[in-house]
Length: 298
Ligand SMILES: NC(=O)c1ccc[n+]([C@@H]2O[C@H](COP(=O)([O-])OP(=O)(O)OC[C@H]3O[C@@H](n4cnc5c(N)ncnc54)[C@H](OP(=O)(O)O)[C@@H]3O)[C@@H](O)[C@H]2O)c1
Image 1 (cartoon, protein in one colour):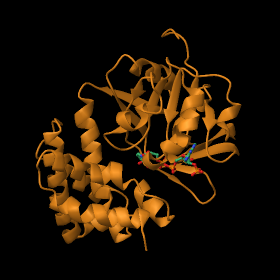
Image 2 (tube, protein in one colour):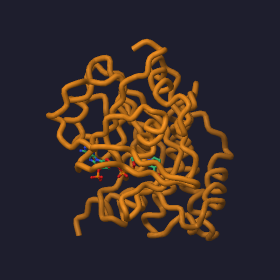
Image 3 (cartoon, helix red, strand yellow):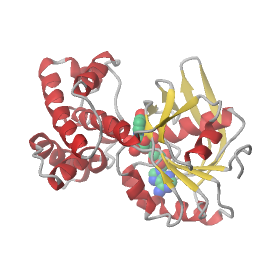
């Protein structure tokens, strides 16, 4: 592909985030090939002031795929990467850029093992989107991604140019990714309480959230993220401003009885802390409870 061309794009995982990106591409006349777990006729995205129907079909059999693509977006949960490996093998050649649309700071390591030879680009996904009972997806803010500044980033910029999903390129992507991870880690408290963002208006929850965020901040800095002392308060302030009924994808999974991304969103802080000799007493309480909520037994 030269830079003036439109890349060929496939998307694996047409859930909340995948549907948003597929709809942005479709609206700009660049409908991607959509690959999922269950076959469907189309996808629907709703947002303030409109909706977009993305024609399918959602393909469900990797063996039917005959071509590789310039760009593959991977939008499954981090718990679903291994099960998506047949799709990655079918869709990726050695020139395919795989852009991972997930939370976490380990996206590259988690995915690269399934696509030997293909460059893997991590991203930060900033927008909340939720699956609705009628199978549509509700996009609750402007769609926006942050990507690292690498040569492979060009193909994502070309695919999403002039779409409703904007892309920022960060020179210090590591710090941006850790900042988002702090936000994700503290959102995990919603799972333990079984409540949405409104719970952060409680003074006791605010105090707990700040203490947990300061613990995460210490680990993030040890991992070379450049984040200031103000970050915990800024993240809590954002939860205070959020609609009281705003959830988080890990809470949606808990309420649906699905496996949780506790390892990539919470245990990573404990793991990195241990490796660097940093005590993580709040993680030591939060992580086993999230793990048990996700995986049992009991
Ligand atoms: N939702 C948000 O607001 C939000 C915001 C920022 C970041 N994120 C992150 O973005 C990532 C995706 O989250 P999400 O909320 O979009 O998840 P989701 O709604 O559960 O979507 C995952 C999609 O992947 C599909 N899938 C599962 N296993 C598959 C397989 N083996 N092959 C192909 N497709 C498969 C699922 O199929 P089914 O339809 O069969 O379940 C579903 O369509 C997560 O890391 C999440 O933490 C989410």
